[in-house]
Length: 300
Image 1 (spheres, helix red, strand yellow):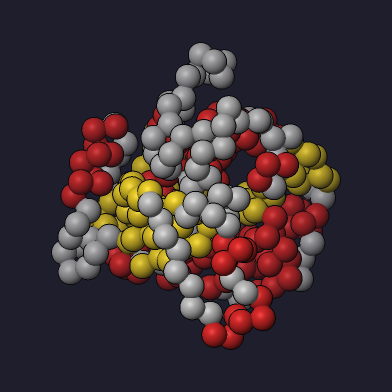
Image 2 (spheres, one colour; image 1 turned 90 degrees about the vertical axis):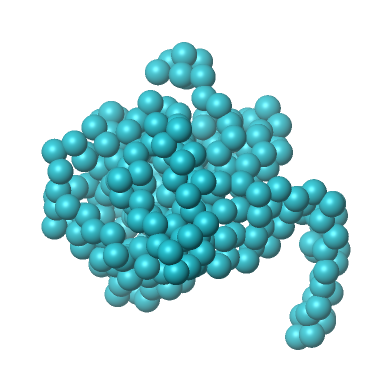
């Protein structure tokens, strides 16, 4: 069975600053901020939330169907996914724009400064979700605003259970819109910062949100994650990585594992535990789609 993954396909230009941002920014001069970071290391990777989640799910043996838009420069991305065995039937190629581009600078403390050009992602609402016998689950990850709103409605109408994972797209929505997403979704996933914003905008606590869906997961980075079901919280500890090399795409690797577990019918705590394992594998490798998964080592 397959999972529809709504979100962005993007090219990530990733740069490393061999210092700390905090040492270069003067707090009392923020009103005239003008900084430059020397970045000796630079690379370009395949990325975007839908792409990274699809890569993770596919590597675990799941069937990933990313639903996204790419621009005139996106042929290589589509070809890469076809080569990996990832379905591209829901990837729309547009000739009059660029594929989304993300420019990420990471410092030695793993802090990140990101600039994002949405490009073709702004037309992601052209893609439509419909019921299909082989589609068991879906996820809404950061995407064009209209696409996120419309795809949530379409998942609900099609009777396809889905995860609402707003990520960095959360600030685009007001409290009423976020409440509607939660009420339509089966599961909600956020990091701790996003979780506070979600609660502030909806007026609902984490326990409240978990009662309005089948569950809520709040990821806590190196501290693991909290799983909320019916107002009750369970902590799932982190898995220590072999090395901390690159945090880019860790959350998406986690979400791919979450989808895999949910599709298998696992409880939310077990899904989150697998997500922590896959996140630890990813953070030890550079780039969001360059890690390998040993299924036997995971007992899968």
